[in-house]
Structure formats: structure tokens, C-alpha cells
Amino acid sequence: MITQKIHEFSVDLKEDPKWDEEFKTIKNGLLKNEKLDEYSNDIWVSIKKTLMKELQEDHSALKNYLSKNLNEFAQNLMTDENLQNKIDHWVRVTAYKYILKNTHQFGNLISTTVGNWQGKELSENWSWK
Image 1 (cartoon, rainbow, N blue to C red):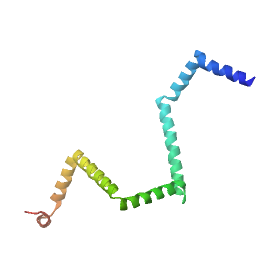
Image 2 (image 1 turned 180 degrees about the horizontal axis):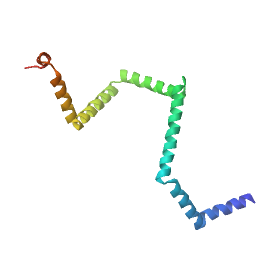
Image 3 (image 1 turned 45 degrees about the horizontal axis):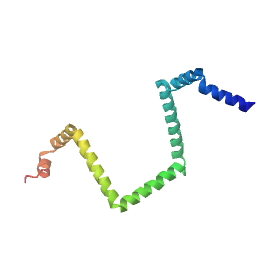
Image 4 (image 1 turned 90 degrees about the vertical axis):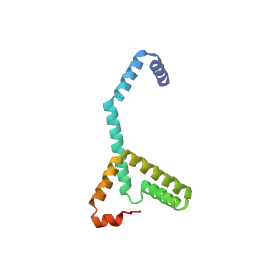
């Protein structure tokens, strides 16, 4: 009897246009911007709460995981010349891009720094070669 009713209901869900409209209405209601904002905020609050709890415990799984991976990364960084070169290259490229993007600010920084030097410091720090 129950199996028969479930089967009839599943056929009804597939074939009756009222259910198609009902699901569209539910889907549209769930995917409204306000609802998505609410969902994403709830998810963020939950993640943040869980992270804070994990970080406050002395031997939490998160702390153990982070410690293990940071120690492994530090060991690799000390011994793996290829990794050292990759990171060095990444730092240089990133710094170069940042400097290019902010050329005017670096120019101001240099001008201000040199402008604040006293005459004696300026002559000691400037090479006349």
C-alpha cells in the first residue's frame, strides 16, 4: 500500500505540470539574492565559529593539521632548492608587478626619504662615482 502510494506520487511528480511550477517557485525563492546573501552569511558564521573553537583548543585537529603542514613546509623550504627558487621567483615577480602598479607611490616614498636626509647623511649615502 505504502509502496504503491510512493510510486504514484513519484509518477505524479514527474508528469503533473503543477509540480513543475511548484519546484520552479521553490527554486526561485531559494535563489533570490536576499536568500543567497542570508545563506552565505550563515555559512560564513558557522565556519568562523568552528575555526575559532578549533583554534582555542590545545590539541585540536585543525591545530595538529596546521602544525604538521607548516613544519613540513619549513623543512622543505630549508632543503628543497627548487622550492626556494620558485618562491624567490614568485616574490620578485610579485614585487615587480606591485611596484609597476604603484610607481607614483614608490617615487613619493623615495623623494620623501631622500628629502628628509640631512646634508651630511645625504653626502654619506650618495655615491658620486
